[in-house]
Length: 90
Image (cartoon, rainbow, N blue to C red):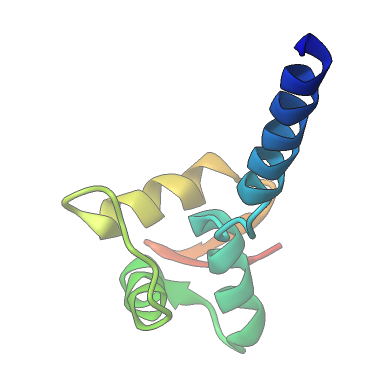
């Protein structure tokens, strides 16, 4: 009896793990990198935010522009400031 219960429990655990292995949504940083790669010119962080919204990214903060600005300034090795609040990839 105990072996059957253990087997059932293992099967349930495997199913739960498979259910959790769904595709991850790309982060703001990954999407920002993609947007700047596709853009031929440097972009203002507000333009990047508009493009993120067009792609359907849902922001968790009340001020999405601030989120993008914070992410860009957090990774100076990836993003280079060209003009005030305007960035491109390094």
